[in-house]
Image 1 (cartoon, helix red, strand yellow):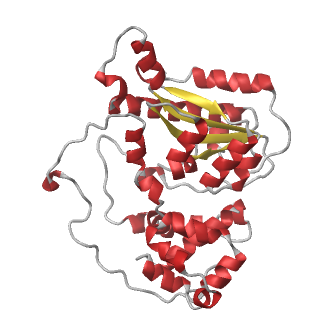
Image 2 (cartoon, helix red, strand yellow; image 1 turned 120 degrees about the vertical axis):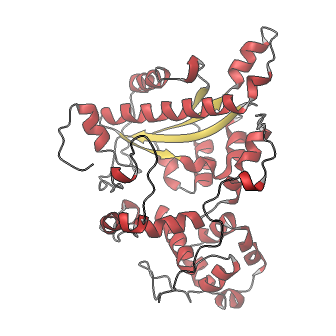
Image 3 (cartoon, helix red, strand yellow; image 1 turned 180 degrees about the vertical axis):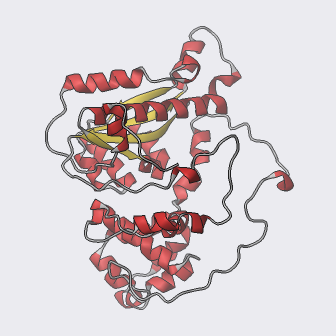
Length: 356
């Protein structure tokens, strides 16, 4: 699906040039523009007209600081505008209750997903409008790193749930346009197409990604997409794995039922074949398999709390207090403790360092 095409409108031109902006000028956004962007959100398509979402505009520096810690992204503190979009089935449930109507459907999963979709559509619509005004922005799915804490910070009532945040303003950086996978791997006609070998199909994209510089570390290129897949799948955050429990605590009825194991679809019926190990010496940022934790934590103190957050098996390092013991524990030792590839762990650590 490659080829030359003519951009048919200024809006499409802006959309095709979309880049994530993380640093902004101190220029304030006029209140009339803020109001107009809120009206754009309000006019966004919504499931069966029920408008089951709300927006919380974060203007309190203390709340913004707490959210920045949850996201693990300090630049949240510097966002000129920061909005969080939430599922909101509470409002309609209250409207029904004031008419003495209490249907079981008021908090079911259909209502939840309607609100989740409404919130996502509104957020994207706002971003398109933001960019049409020569501003830029960033989406923050990272608010879900601790959805329960976000709920408490925002004082969200039952039947609501945070979906994502967006921050925007006038750009103070000019990042590269990040490469995207070809349309032939994501767009099909009439039915899903499974590739014989995805690694073969994305080999050109892998090479293209290795030429890309992320401004979070403009001095080094990123890893290939295929390597990023491994690191992201390894980079699990315990609170996010249990997010369905938070949804339940917010009052949504999951209506789950027992499904026999044989009816549950799974990609791998047997363990995948072992991948041959290759020699690894040093990462792009200088981390090695034998880099010890004492040096790592001394140079990047926030990495310890990050590790404790992403893998409960790393809790053992809480009991390591002596510097000598930290010096005798390497990244490779830590990867074995967490049952994960050492290279993936190094990439995760580098990604976190990048965010600083």
